[in-house]
Length: 399
Image (cartoon, rainbow, N blue to C red):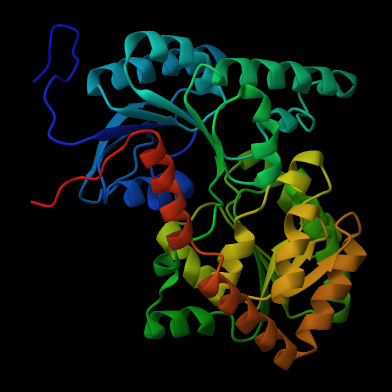
């Protein structure tokens, strides 16, 4: 039932509205991890952009689409649309996932009775230190201003969740309870059908495939990998670099141009996007996973999820020697670290691993063991629900 304001006035169970205006409706952290975990205890409504995808929703999760808007003015309109959608849902909790959405905190506080939870996936202010559209001398100033505004507006809420400890520590001054819910993977999504996986591997029977999967950009190592590929081809022409997740058409063309100039276009495969549940086949049909993040401040703090996804697929890796990564590889033995400012080092490490099949297998098994025993989502789901309980949530009663 709705009142004159369009607000729901009858509900059987506690509800959380999970809100994003920037991510996809079935983003890995937002939907597959958090929404599905919370749906075991309470009603969940996803308020997220409609990208025209044909999506299937699990029981306990309702979807309230809002238009996808990309212009600065459109993104402000999205904030208003998201706020109205939250008002209509009248949830007990409002769990937001974007830096933009902190601008809606005053309205959400005024128009709803929901407990406001801010989920910081990464160190958002530090993103402005690598924004090419901002003149380099101004980037530190912009990052500082964004940081001040983010913390001031978030302080109107009730709880902060982060994906890593350095980002958690940056919210101490808000005075809010802050909890790290690491972005470890749910292991079940990496299950594969043996016959289908074998068929996928057969496609690359004459090659030595290595993979980068996920969002890719120059600061995440896009051109660095292509430069390393030129060196790799000289020693091992069977190497095939698979880049899965390059959706930006301009970067796609620039990558192809770079590869053509380097003479390695026959050693490069670019896939724009794969459904989340298809990624395991791409990873398991490769030999090595790459994590070539450049030493920008944000990447020194934020833990890349692909580290754990590679582990969950038994895929050894060559990864940047950054504080956010090194602990996991050194303690597990799941791969080797290198200086990610040097393409020649990436090439050397890949060749070293390819020359040692037994070592590759050992590293893959070590990573799989580590993610099964400690770095998986089932443990984080318990932490997430504890956060909600601390904020007054009670589980859905069995019927």
